[in-house]
Length: 364
Ligand code: M6R
Image (cartoon, rainbow, N blue to C red; front, side, top):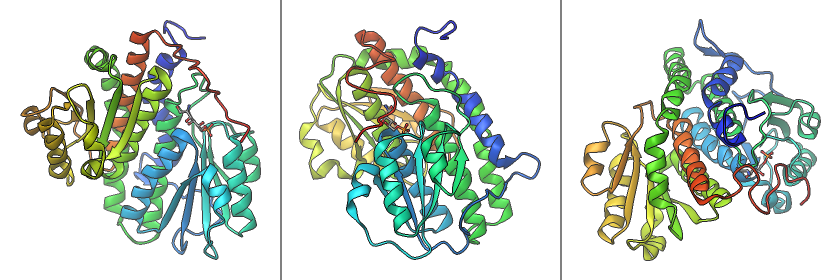
């Protein structure tokens, strides 16, 4: 049941810390801080190319993972929504592999994409939350997320569990490919192992998120902006807001603003930015300043180092714990999901069962 929570989604949001912790414990040896070598149908050291496929939020996990596999493991990655991949008939690299991310393991388009890539001779790995699912059965190897049953149609804890698995794989592949050494591996896993604690603290800050929700609940359109591995999390924020509150929202790469979306900006359009300190901070901050100069109301998620610069022009700044940029996507997913939840509660929409949506999309 829902226990003391108003909705399954609220309950499942509060399971983020436990689920991230449980999932990491499956993959990281806490004593050595090394990622245990996962049983895979390919050797990550020599893998020429990896496909990532998913739908909805699972696709956004694939997108985040692409940044990790590329930058950390120096592995070439292709990433697509399953409904496109299944009809693209792309040229496939011999000896290549594909990973299919899915909470349910029953999503029709992802199953069809799997079939296509199998016929192209790729090794198949599924990252699923349901061990007896069709996807688990039809792949060569299944890597489990340990999220427990997710009832709310909007995915929450399965999303951070999927990110946790992909982060562990990226570290493991990076090690196998000689792109990082044992010390760097230990540093990155240590950063991951701290995420549950940070997540718990974020869940305690719901009053602050509720204030942000009140700020955007009457907007017609909301833009989410970020760069790098946080860009897919901006898209996750927009997807959650759309599905739960029916407000039109889009996630954009911050650098794309001036190629079109900036034309939408006026004082009625909240711009939600994921902008922690780090190598891309100045670039994102300058895009936000341009939006502010056109009347956009900037709501920024950052850390204590990023806050002072953003406070000069943002209407609201929420300070998140300062973490290694590698784990920032996992951490930022939590407040953007919480924000969509609180907007939906304020609007009185059906939080656990948004209109027109199904938990598992088992037809094309
Ligand atoms: O079961 P799956 O992970 O394959 O489902 C994929 C999408 O349908 C799912 O993530 C959907 O986008 C959610 N409603 C997002 O909150």
